[in-house]
Image 1 (spheres, rainbow, N blue to C red):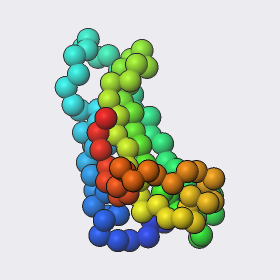
Image 2 (cartoon, helix red, strand yellow):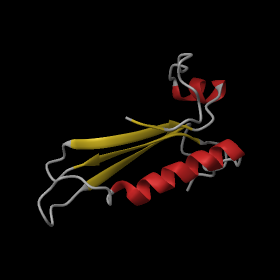
Image 3 (tube, rainbow, N blue to C red):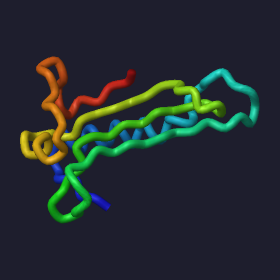
Length: 104
């Protein structure tokens, strides 16, 4: 388990993420009775060391029984320059606000 360093903004994002997950499979989507719905959850981390590394991004995709995406959600969790360097990622462009989740 990874420790997410507490901050008001991070706790707020996690609250949104948990709320999204709770409602992910319960939201209305036209489908046949008893047709399964799947959720795929993705985490982006700076590494696998629970003592030093952090979760820097969360995402979820809801899919129907044929694995067709129905909707998705994503957020960045306080990314910093060290996290970008560690993951060899590119820093977000100016239009993206870290710590703001959104539905797409």
